[in-house]
Image (tube, rainbow, N blue to C red):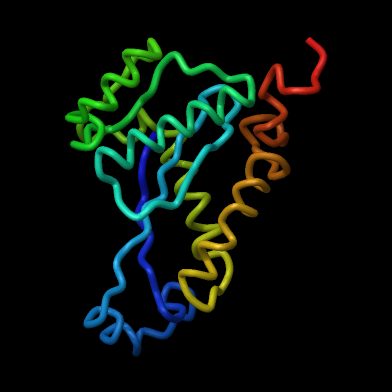
Length: 180
């Protein structure tokens, strides 16, 4: 599990347009950030993610509860949850209690070792390249509206080289409607 923040914007920035003339205006009038929380299943690479307004402890716990329910609906029961050492994960009593109740072991990666949590880190790179900066959006609201469609594409249709060019959903077992 990890979080990535995306800046809000009124018009496309230099990362998309290549024009750095409007950078000063955006710095003097910042709109803040949207925080994309993501959980990646280690085996299937299925992603559960939400764009939320912050990364506070209560937000993280509610997100994890919804994520665990979503994975359970896809026939995936979590036994371990790996995060980095961010305070909202490491010092979050409610998260610790939730994981304890569900008998989920919390693994915290050592500092400066993003490769330990490489699947979610790689997902964030792909998401930034294909969703956040892959298209030219009018503003961050338009970008955010495109997210559910992109996540569905990622999970259900996008080929993954690590999965033999199949989408993550192909590795989820015991989905409703499948024969065992």
